[in-house]
Amino acid sequence: MSGAPAPEGGRSFRTFLVLWSTQTLSLFGSFVTQFAINIWLTLERYPRPEQKGELALALTACAVASTLPLVFFMPLAGAFADRHDRRRILFVANVVSAALTAVLLVLHASHLLSLPAAVVLLAGYALAGSFHSAAFDSAYATLVPDAQLGRANGMMQTSFALSQVVAPGIAAVLIGLPALARAGRVPLPASLSSGVPFAFAADGLSFAIAAAAVAALRFPPAVRSERGASVWHDTFEGFAWIVKRRPFLWLISFGGLANLTFAPLLLLMPLLVRDRLAADCAARHLSYEAALALVNSVMGLGGVVGGVLMTVWGGLRRRLVYGMIGSMIVLGAGQVVAGLSTTVAAFATGLFLSELLVPALNAHSFLLWKDLTPPGMLARALSTRRFIAQSAFPAGTMISGWLAAKFEPWIVVTIAGGTLATWCTVMMLTPSFATLEARMRESAARD
Image (tube, rainbow, N blue to C red; front, side, top):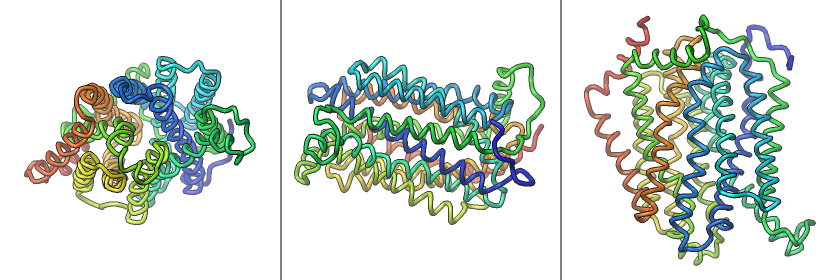
C-alpha cells in the first residue's frame, strides 16, 4: 500500500475529493443495506399487523447492533487512529465491511438469515465502522487547507444526506427486481422471491471500490503527540482531556440530548409509514416500499440542501454554539411535524425539516472542536466526543423500542421532538449559554 505521492506540503484538496467521493459511494451502499434490512424485517420476517410489537423489538435489536459497537468502540478507535496509519485503517475497515456484507448476502440467498445472525453481522459491521469513522474524521482534517475546511465539512455532511436521498430509491429498485423479472421486464429468473440480496451485493461492491481508492492514495503524515504506554492509555487520555474541560462536557450534553430524542424517529419510521400512513398510501396507490423510499429520500434531500448551503456558506465565524443549538431547535420541530402527520406529504415535510440543519449542526460542532483541540489529540478528542454524545442514541433506541411496544409510535416520536425543541430554546436564552464558547476557549488554552 505505497499509494500515490502526496503533493508538496502534504495538503491537497484533490486528494480529499477522491477520498470524499469514494467513501461517499460506500455510504450509499451502507444506506442501501440499512433500507434492505428494514424491508426484510417489515415485509418478510414480521409482515402481519399483529406482529407490530415483535417488529418494533426486532427493529430495535438491529438498530442497537448497528450503533452500539460504533459508539462504544469509538474512543479506542480514535486512540488507535492517533497512533497508526489512518489510510491503512480505512483500507482494512472497508475490506472487513465488504466481507461481512458478503456473508449477509449468502445467508439471505440461502434462506438461512435469522434475526440473531443479522444482529451479529450488523454489530461487526458497526465495529469496522467505528475505526473507519475515527480514521476518516481525523484524516480529512489534515488533508484540507484550513481556509477550505468549512466547505470540506459541508461536503462531508452533504455526502451523508445525499446517501439518504439516493440510497432508498436504489434499494427499492434492487429489491423490486424479482417483481420486474416476473413481469418479464428484466432478464432475471422469474423464480426469484426477494431482491434483498441485490441490495447487499451493491453494498459489498461499494466497499470494494472504496478500499481500492484508499489503497491508491497517500495521506500527509499525521501530527502525533508523544505515545503513552499503550493504546488504552491514549484512549483514557482522550477522556481526561475532555473531562478536565467542563464547558466541553456541557456542549457534548446537547449533542447527547439530540441523539436521545432523534432516535425514536429513525427507529420507528418503518412502523409509522406502514401503519399511520397506510390510508394515504392506499389512496395514492403507493406500495409500502415506495412510500418508505420516498419519505427517506425527502429526508435526505433536506440534508442535501442543508449540506450544499453549508458548503457554499462555510458556517459562522464566531458564536458557533448558536449555529449548533439553533439547528437542534429546527430538528426537534420537524420531528414533531412528522410525528403528528397522517399523510405522506406532511410526514415527508417533517422529515425534510428535521434533516435540513443537521449538516450545520455537525459542521459547527466539528469546526469548534478542530479549532480548540491540539493536533496530536484530534482523533481521540473527536472520537471521545462522539462516544459521549452518541452513547445516548442506542439508549434512545432501546427506550423507544420498549415504549413503541406499549404505546402508539407516533406519540413517542412527537414527545421526543417536542422535548428537544423546547429544552434547546430555553437553554439558548440563558446567560450561561451566551458565555459557553468563550469558556470553552479559555479551558482549551489550559495545559
